[in-house]
Image (cartoon, rainbow, N blue to C red; front, side):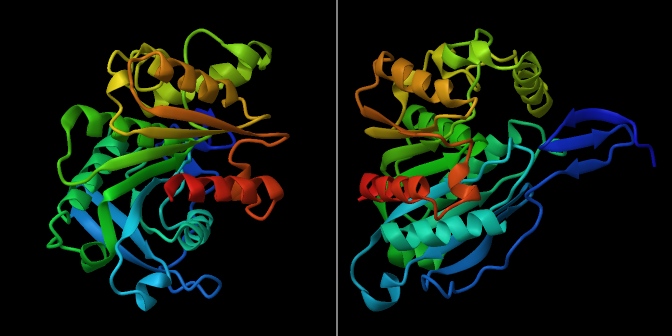
Length: 314
């Protein structure tokens, strides 16, 4: 075994020259369950074996007590720089239990394939395949009984954090350009979205050069065929199709001390100018770092953000 590094993206991932991959966080998993705190039920469903794509489904306590009303559906895309994390990690499992309980929604948490074993666009393709699978439940006769029985596909929302927010944005664009007929996308929540660009904006001018170089290099590592940091996949400001985003409202959450903060604000500005006829709102958490709400879900800012998401969906 060689300890020579081919890629070092500390604190996310290291790849050795002999091919070994060392994910530095996000590898532990929890089984689906009935959550003792919230009574939210979850279960795992394989939607494709080639390529391997799974989801974790969540239904709130109300589905066992109220039999008639169908609930909004949230499709969630986890973060992790496209390299780390899963729909089954304790972080995302616990977050979705609380979000499903508070918002009283059905949720589909997508477990897409990860870089470097599966370079981008694999994560986008897996996420789109998941949306097509969700759409197959539109008439109430899809393969998954929980969605047939409990999900209102006229009230669909997407959300994700970091790389997952990038995916959520692109899935919203595909819904707009490819017109999935089987459901109506009402809104998208982008939490600390992973966008970037060749030219620094705002506070990025003050960032350490090695940090900005790392962000650009990480993107090339994730997407070897990319044109670079101004690829429309990473820089929505360069996307001529931006105005075709397939929903009526967008909430962008940013954190004051996150190096990606200005990209979230910039996204809201270019979206307004794109010809898109929806409403975009930005919520900034003061004094907070990237994905603080997952690290410390009970802090005041995380609770405030959760309440904001709940009111956005309802």
